[in-house]
Amino acid sequence: DIEKFNPNAKFKVNETKRIILSVGRLSPIKNYETLIEVANILVNYMDIKDLEFRIIGDIPFESQRGYLVFLKDMVKEFKLEDYLKFIGPVIYREIHNYYQNCDLFISTSNTGSLDKSTLEAMACGKIVLTSNEAFSDLLKDYSHILLFDKNDVDSLVEKIIYILDMNAKDRDNLAGNLRGIVVKNHNLNGFVDKILTVIKDAIDSK
Image (cartoon, rainbow, N blue to C red; front, top):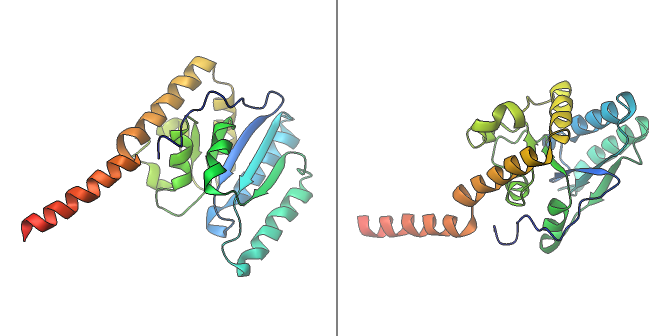
């Protein structure tokens, strides 16, 4: 829904910390441990203290609660409690606020399918970094900037620094182009039109 997920200028990005957002269920296939390792390098080894990582999502099954415990233990081990926040689940009618109020969106997911959260972030005019191979074609013109190999912590660190250091004009141009991709190829109205076309073709063929 490109009307809901839009670059709302009324939202003001945090002036004291740069917000790095990730959204998705707290499941091992989402590979959040890579994000925590990256936070450890940036904050504790590179001494970049003006960052806040936010993870939005909940465990899909009670049987996977151990994964959340594992992630929280990593945060404690790396002493990242002030820099990485588990926001928990956020209702749909409010989730766009979090996209609009972040500086960068990261997906470490390995699902192999087009994650809706990454498309939503792009629609909100946010730069995204992803290891999901399903985005290879969609982001092919920007793959050298936005794609990283799964579990490649060093590559992700480099790309985060590169994007956060971009000048405002280049960032805005890139973010605008990413929104344009979603508007052209993945907006809700266009999707409905495609479904109707398939149905009409199926009826006509009979």
